[in-house]
Image (cartoon, rainbow, N blue to C red; front, top):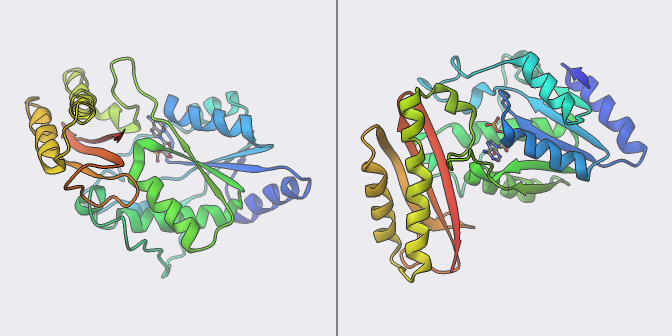
Length: 281
Ligand code: AMP
């Protein structure tokens, strides 16, 4: 597996393979790999001639006071794991390679970013859309693999791809979970043993709320309230949001119909954890 540090090298590497008729698949990440990341790499490996993983902890998607400086890293281990999945190239640029000192251009996806994570992290999706656009331009993949754990991010990037005419297919990948249901996340490493046990409340509450909808409940606000209250039964959990929204527009659902997204963000210890469930009615 090649480790690539510059945009110029990245372009040259994929261009040669694309010209040889191969499909380039990209997996954007912030590193500290777990099975969730590896599942994306495996899917890309199965579907593409060349697989590029990017590892970049993007400063513009972190707000002041968030965990940019503390974000976990282990570059050697990440490289070994990616190589074992048959990844061809790891694009790991320094921040200075991605952002000029006087960087001035940002991508704002104006719908989809005002609620859920966008409400408590006001600069987050602007940073995500900007860096993903830049990564797409550096790598020029035909396919890009994203996990549905970050459901709102998937909708934001799908919209950016459409609106800015990127010739890229976004491949949605299912959430990978620990045996007790907790969604895998690099940020789970922030949790103590007791907090890790408390983190099971996210999935348990989502499944219970999903069951209520399956049984016929249709009042979105009432389900959202029940979801919040279920999470609040865990003393270590502080709810950031618990919402029921349309799975495509992400607009709050008064009356549940079609595909509903149940989405939560919860602070436990110093971690802010997210999870979600799509329920078809
Ligand atoms: P991150 O390194 O957290 O930015 O994640 C990189 C990619 O991996 C994103 O597309 C995430 O949605 C995806 N991802 C993270 N955790 C999981 C998980 N538990 N299951 C599936 N995909 C995930």
